[in-house]
Amino acid sequence: MNRRPLKLAVLCPHFAPDTAPTGEVITRIVTELAALGHELHVITALPWYREHRLEAGWEGRWVRTERTEWGSITRVNPFPGNDKRNLLRRAAGFAGFSALAGLTSLRGGRVDAVIAMSPPLTMGLTGWGTHLVRRGPLVFNIQDVFPDAAIETGAITNTKIIAVARWLERVSYHRSAAVTVLSDDLRDNVAAKMRPTYRERVHVIPNFVDTEFIRPGDRLTALRSELGIGAEPVVLYAGNVGFSQSLEMVVDAAALFPQATFLINGDGAARASLEARAAGLPNVRFSGYQPKERVPEVLATGDIHLVPLKKGLGRVSVPSKTYSILAAGRPVLAAIDAGTEVPRMIAASGGGVAVEPDSPVAFHDALRELLGDLPAAQAMGAAGRRWVQGAASPRAVAQAYEQLVRSLAR
Image (cartoon, rainbow, N blue to C red; front, top):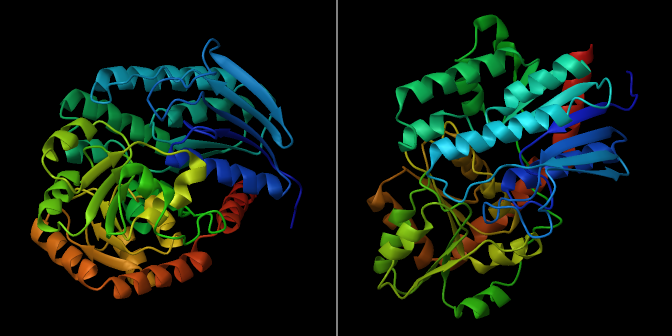
């Protein structure tokens, strides 16, 4: 087999040191591909995810390029907006970023493949334009199926906007040599939107977790002390505090379980309304995003971790936090559509419990059982850790992308 090094262009909305979960995913994939001897040129946004504005030290220039041992990183202005609910402003920002990223991606000569990550969905056309100039086949990586999630949550209701998004989705899929998704559910969703002769282009390559970086830790963390939390059980949600997650149900549950502290760690469009809803509940705490180096500590803080996703979203999104929770050796309580990827992971690993979404009764019953037998919950966490160590390594995921690119060349 031809094992010559590959030259790849990678277009993604986030990359280290940006803190977005998808940025951590693509950063590690690039790192692993570089370790396999490949040359990579990343086109991404200036860091902005934490507070939805450019981070200090990155202002002043719309485009910055740095050389690395394995290639280069070009960062462009993402045109961020602080109001995540202003869809027109967000769409304009995504379009501006995608256009600027596309222009900067055209330099550098022929590549073996162009890997473009969505969302935003506009990166599909950006990747296609890069393919036309640099000739490498387009591999379109789908982390969340858009606009399905936005439609399910009611974030998008305008029929014209939906129609444009659907058109953009079809165009992007059909112009890709390969479309990669995270699960069988997402493969079925995407394939159903493609012409039958194109459906074989959809491939499942799951995300991964760094089990060396994220390990089981002492539950009595410094973060507990900082937030005034004692040794009581902590029920933790960590991640985007948005409208796709059933976090109202989580806050309301705190009134039924005064023996536990409920910690929501993260930021997002729904945080202000959730804090208002939690007023008067002394066992509910909020904290913002923590630096990456504290992620293992954050995960160790929770005795039970929550993955709540509104009904209908389990088939269009795979919360990557689930892998991290399992790696941390903590049990998962997922409220998510049955038969989708997260419940399958939980069943395969024995790492927790899955209940139907948006059902307070089912959620409360499962939480009562876990809090009532913490040693059994800890055993679930240990089982999840053992499973994820063998099922989701970064090197295996990078090798899957390498094999896919080589197969497209053949």
